Structures are given as structure tokens and as C-alpha cells.
Image 1 (cartoon, one colour):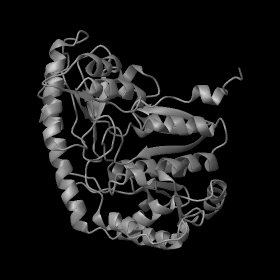
Image 2 (image 1 turned 120 degrees about the vertical axis):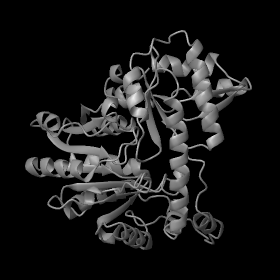
Image 3 (image 1 turned 45 degrees about the vertical axis):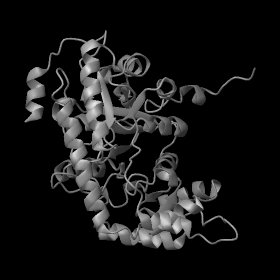
Length: 411
């Protein structure tokens, strides 16, 4: 039997999807599974995008330009300029989801063995992209005690070595929902400039900032215009995860020329996805205002509810639609599987993503889970009650030892 490549063996499984068989088995037993494990919103896709798909009248579903349809790139440039990001269509390459933008960036900017610094916990698929590109992720740990703020710049600088080529941030963050301040981003800017590194900025949750907070794009940082690479996507912005359309944006023309060669090798991004995405640019501002209001209410319901459960600690995020909670359990992976295999409350159980998969090593996230508040408020209420009752009887529950910190986070 032929052997599997070392790269294939090193590819990590998804912590977000690995419990799917247990969820399917629970559903087959008649249990309602409340899916908080994955960032698939139930928010309606803008009607203008859906209507564009309904009205498609083409005799051939053809390739687009490898960089994406010119009209869509021009529309994206206008969108970015409306958000204070001064770019032109020539600075934009359309990708098959934000995932491809990240993979193209890693392959174009780094050689095998080069190092990329990433504050953790971080989006688990960064590990997979890094394995595919032969890049070594160097994690710099943030902690739940600070709400997952950017670690001290001195810690990042100490991690810079001869093979370090870049820093990757997600802002607002997945899995934590943390929103970087201008001061944090300017400190990163100074570090990137000092060591002439790439700054990869995953900003797919730009529209989702709460409590009056404003998003500061890395593309607006003066002095590192050639260093910044923006990764973007329509998946969460317009609740169009299945469109599989993203964007690679940079003012570094030499880098764009290289990335275009990778894009040519995969031919083109999806035609139907681009049609829907270009139409989505006409989404009225009221759509986002309504969505932000809804997500704020969902966040408050879930996070405030979790913090009333004995032994649970959950900082309140100011962006995206995720939170990370620390639970009084021996092992969050085991607890999440137990919820699906052995527990139900009033015919319901909850599916969550164990946070161990969002760290470079499983230890720091051993008692943490990521929850996505992407479902309606009734289901979030039920989810909190399921977890409250589950923690009373889970055989691996441990005595809460962070009561004081939990109380601080509630205030």
C-alpha cells in the first residue's frame, strides 16, 4: 500500500468539525443539537445578492479573469475606500474564500521553514494553511484574564528570529472576538517596520463591532504600506459562507504579481459566487445596522448567561460573533463529546468547539470552548440552560477556582 506524505500526516483535523459524527448520531436519536460550534450564521443573506443569482441569464458559465471579474474588483475598491482603506482595483485579487487568500499569501511570501508569528488562540485553519505552505507558526499566547488582548510587544519581539518573515492577526478575532485597539495596531506597525516583516491582517469580521467600538484596519497604518496584506471574505459579512469568495488585498505590486501566478494555476474564483458578491455590494447600510443590533443582543444573552453558571468564565468580546469560555471541566474535548453522546436536557444538547484546537498545544485550552452566537436568541437561551444542567452532572466536573475573576468579568 503506498505511503501517505509527511505533509498529509501533519495536516491537523478541524476542531470545529471533528465532532460532527457525534452530533449526527445525537440527531438520529431524536435529540435537538444546538450548533454553536461553527460560524454559520442564521442571518438572512441580503436579498439583492439572492436576486442576482435568481436573475442569472447566461448560456455559458464561463471562467472569470484569474484575478476576478474586473467589475467586481472595481466595486470592492469603492467598498474599501468607503471604509477608509485607500486602494484601487489593481490592488485586489479575488480568491476562492478568505482561506485561499491566506494560503496564497503564505505561499507567495514565505519559503518552507520560514516562521510566522500568530497571537493565540487563533483560527484553527491557520495551522492547516501553514502545513500546506511549509510555514512554521510561532504562537504568542494571549490569556482569558485580559480578555485575549494582544500580548506585550516585547513578547512578540523576543520571538523574532532569523527565519521570521511575518505576523498574522485576526481583527476582530476568531475565536475570541477580541477587537484590537489603534494603540495595539500602531505598536504592531512599529515592530513590523523595525524588522521589515509582512503583516497579514484577517479582517473578515470588520462590520461586526459592538458597544460603539470602531474597527481600525491594518491597511490604514502609515509607514508599512508595502508590508500589509489584507485577507477578506464575503462569508460572514453578508451571511454568504457558501459563496466561497474572498479577497487578497495589498499595495505591494510585486507581491500581487506573484500571487496572480498562483491564481492562474487554479484558473479562477467561482463565477456564481462573484455574481452574488458583486450584487451584495449594494446591500443597504440598514442591513448591517440591524445585524449588529441582533448580534449585540445575542452576545449579551449568551455571555451574560454563561457568566451566571457556577465556575464559568467568559470575557465579553467587542467584535465578530464568537466567545471563548473557560469551564469547570477536566477536559473540554471530552466534555463536548459527552454532551453529544450522553447528555440532553429537555430533548436538547449543545455542540461547541473545544478550544484546544485553537492553540498550538492542547494544554492551554484544555478547559476552554469556543461558542459562536450565530443562532436565534431562543436557541441561545436553551444552550445556556443545557450547559448549566450538564455541568451539574458531568462526571469530569471540577470545583470552580476562579470565582473572583468571574465576578470581575461580569462587571
